[in-house]
Length: 301
Image (tube, rainbow, N blue to C red; front, side, top):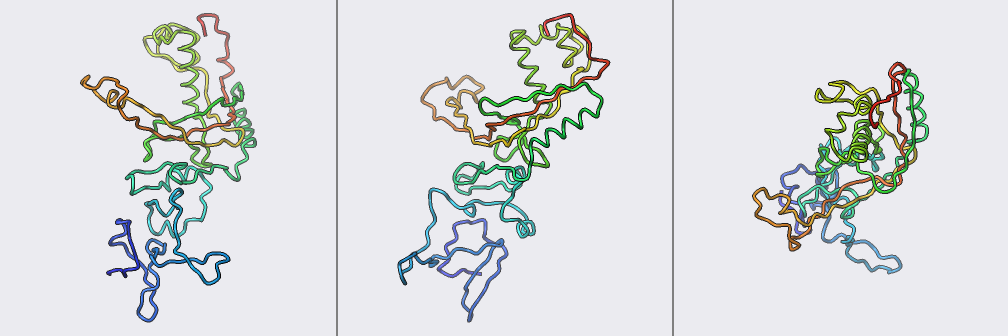
């Protein structure tokens, strides 16, 4: 169906889509595509206090509306979407917004896309208490610690995502947290760097380290499982998600495998945006079986 001249369609992805047309006396009055009315060139709105005068409706170019971005969802799914999606994980990963202008998915908090993460309905203190009660019922000797972020925390940065960078979010509640594997890896790396000068080989010759974490066949204790359990760390207070940026200046140098591009200052920086967490207080839990809770007299750890 050819469109009337008062429609100006810039989004070519709408070509060939099914639409609903409302007519009055044979004239097109409204066209609806994917549940939204197409804007008309002659759309006007009254100006307050201007009597009968009207001006053409304009969009703020500095903050484009959500409709300026594409959200690829099935039509029957869009039909039942609420006005506001409170679960941040669903909003981030299932409602990803695509910009035809830059031909990429735009991370929330950039280019006018809102980034509001108040996590309504989640009582973080009660959640941590319930987690502690559940872990104590396992019969493990439990150690609880709380830690406050001093700057911004990035967890799951390398996970799969249409944004090229990711953030680990709870699959039910949608808030950011630190998985037990991430906590264990961070503690293990800190010990290797601070106590053993970054030497993995020397670390595996330490009995205490091998018993706490785990070790391979080449270690002093042989291949074995670690005795300490590291559990997921949940926020004890509402966390705040913010956009951070890496700004590599030597991308050609980093990507070159043939030594053809020296690390010169004449390259253009290529900013990489990603989500982080700030102002977060996390509840950490460590556990060990009673029979394994023995003093370690050998080694540095």
